[in-house]
Image (cartoon, rainbow, N blue to C red; front, side, top):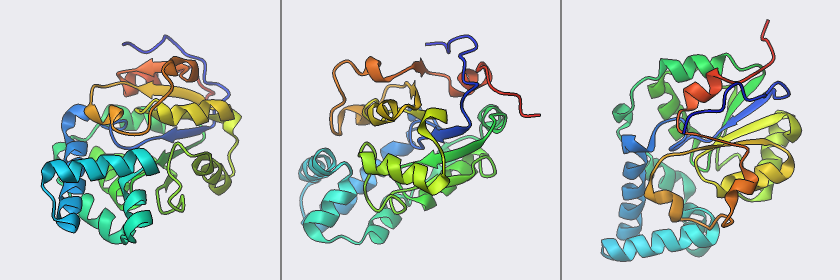
Length: 233
């Protein structure tokens, strides 16, 4: 799907970007590495086979919002140990994306990464993409006090930390369920599309999620370049 021509975002000065499968294409296979390492962590912890580990991993994801939250709540897992293990991946599969860098840099106001992963992972990924100096901050699962998207508390924490207003914010995200609360708060919502199996793994989104999505795009740099925005000079 091509981006709408000159979508009007002139009232936006706070730009919120999900990380995984949003700032980079799902086809890169990067998140597949994370998914596999989560399964390895669970397999080693419970001494189960791959199918058993997947059932535990995805069960906690659906029940607690993240696999980590389930492991913490049910088994007292150290989040630093978990994140250090699952995010020990090969980011070289990503190519620097100058078009995305330039299109984000041109946006007026502040730009942040909003992720249920760790800041360490966000920093490695954005550096590999050539976006290291593009963002004004990262809101990760630790900063969220382990209240992940799509919980209302996650969004409240984001706006409290950056002193921003939802009605002047836009959110870019690959999971429709994470845009529901954003829409309810008054944010402009953009679904970044792309085929990947993880969209169906977690807590369900409303059947008609289009009610909560203002725009869809399969070309994030192109969408951003075509926005109608306030001049930066």
